[in-house]
Length: 541
Image (cartoon, rainbow, N blue to C red; front, side, top):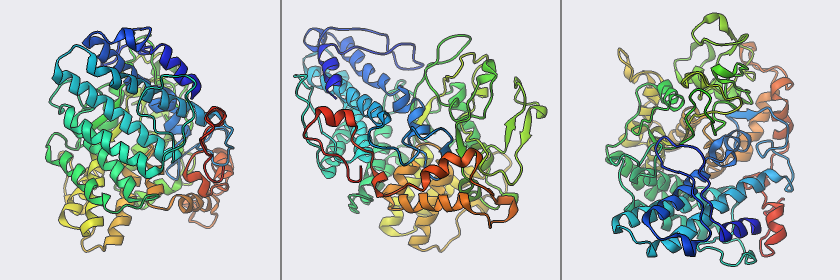
């Protein structure tokens, strides 16, 4: 962290290379905060510097999601050098990369917040910028506390580059600060009616409310187990619903086609990380759809390395394999792979279907580069935006909080059934027998909670939310061990039997048998412990 604070103190560089579809983040440099914050544009540029940090690959550009956060829904078939491959030691540098970017972004925000009061500008705009800064800081500390636990809580800029010794704060204190920042932000930021807020723009009011619901659900579960937060989670999620600013896109597949095509749908997508738009030979900045896509080597068509596979557990969660009615399955877990040098998606000859026994061979395929404007002639990169919060997530959070408070009420059933009906295609024109997709009436509270857990599994698979869900529910280790048993199972019916643990599932098996309670948190980076003598390593590392 010492290097972070030296860099940020001496020169808070606006690192926003490239053009954004919504946010104006033109590169600017300034020597120090004392000489820089002289006009409103300076404050906006400083805010944009923090926002642009989110596009780093180890933040939300792809490697974090696909190499750090895989659980029992998807797995990476790479070597064991990444956090998703359980069993790597604390000295691995991958942990430090994300840690450093998170704290570097927080340092940018702290510099902005402490200097913002003296910037000559309209008071309403000052409040909005403060709200956006507080939102980002609160969200980033939420990311830190759920991934590392008791981390240092820095709320002001580090004026002395040598002032790096700071003990980790208790988890409950970090969450308290997260709630404080986010709650103040919610009162300051505009609604989605403002053109640059929500979707791929700055955080809108409903964006903040959705994240507050997510944070409160985390607090209600492990490790804090503060069940009083279920009421807060319900209240925040209900505010999103009651705003009437959001609705499910009737077509599940269109949600992800929109991300690829650069279409911003603020009704479905409350917050997405905005990447550079690829057209002709312009540069791209993300990995979404490249690391996780259907393997394809044709660069103009959108090449993908196919490093992210789905599990048999996920495939079978959508229903009986040969009689599945859930349209989400074959979009999320592609039943086919490209054949030859692909250039036209609609030609059947370019697709070869997996056999019914190849349930650990299939690619995760929500984000498909061939829906990007062609030619997508940038090897190994992608313009696809990353969804941070979708409306279906809000509905499922509301259903869960309501069920925990009052059991499976009509409200809880309504929320989960909306998601299920969309997943089964029951919101599409001409759909019949709408209630066929609904949960059965009369479920107990515990049974309904299990259905919520499975519905989040199906709806949000591969979107980097599953690990925290499993942790807060207290079932992370058991779920990973269960997946190991699934991979090694040779007694299942032939059509759904993986058969062996070789091939693409090898690294997954090699990692899963090492899971333990230590994996509920990541290790404090070795480089951080070297400088910060007050920081203590997490248990088990």
